[in-house]
Image 1 (cartoon, rainbow, N blue to C red):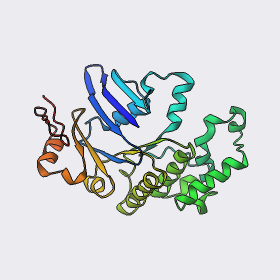
Image 2: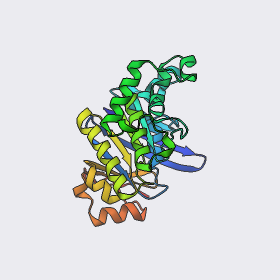
Image 3: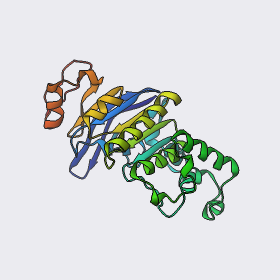
Length: 259
């Protein structure tokens, strides 16, 4: 289980994430929504430890990952796979080599530099691509693929890490509706079939309602709603997208913080 305990992140005088606390079980598909600048991307970067919390703790199965350094931190980042909006593929390399980048950290540097990967790794990469209907493009240059295809390659690369947790930062923001649906269905399938927790930042409320089992909404760095999509009433959405915060209530599905 992933747990955040009062996690705060400051950048100088800017409070990007404000005392965020929540837990995520295996098999949960959580959509994080909110206006631009609400703290969504910073939240995922804190979980993945791409940035350090100013305050609070982040734990995974009881281990405090906010204290990890060196090799143990790199190991956590492999277990906590990150999928980005920009795909982060090398367009000149073929698809399978891009996927195999997911195991570079586990292999000797010399073999990685000459793009040598054991047959076992290549077989695993093909299986991950096949699960996303991309095996047929394994030898194709990544730069020739559509945006949706590139994002599926990025997902395959993340899954080759054999993660315990998947984070996706606006994975469909640059995609057309058809490709966005394909990518979200792929993430949903990973969550359901592999029993992995998936946390995805989304701008589209419609996509969050369609695919996510739970929604966490942020405004001004704080969580203002945490619950099922069915509880996203117009009043809640007005609070989320207006960016305001009112006094905290005891309602378990609605978390509202003082200004």
